Amino acid sequence: MAKSQQTFNKIEKEKKRLKKREDKQKKKEARKAEAKENKQGIQFAYVDHLGNLTDTPPDPSQKIKVDAESIEIGIPKKEAGDYEEVDPIRKGKVSFFDTSKGFGFIIDSENNEKYFCHVSGLLDEIAENDKVSFELERGMKGMNAVRVKKV
Image 1 (spheres, one colour):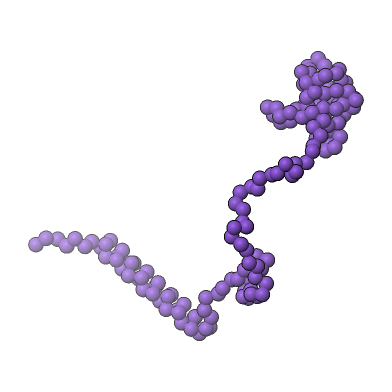
Image 2: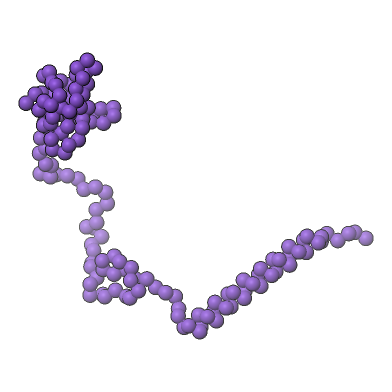
């Protein structure tokens, strides 16, 4: 006769599976019994007219009707009158300038930002503490002051 294919390990695993299944069934029945006892059904969360979550239903009189065609997806295009005229020429003060190395820094008088300035972007000779006017241009490591003039 052939030997049985069931080993001790297989029998133990099957017992564990059956026990797990029974425990799950008992928990399910306990939850059902508790729900009947408390008589509380599913809890709901509502969204009021301001977009906040509440536990009370919203007032239908405060409901806002939105026309689907009025919803714009994306960024609205700017018209000719929407642009503000921004003066590209800024004013500032030279905080540091090394003539031997050919670079320095200018502090903007409006927003106190420091901008790098290279000798190639100068129109006049400048020194430290000079009042200057300049324009900004994007460089490798940020904004650079170019077309720098003494004021």
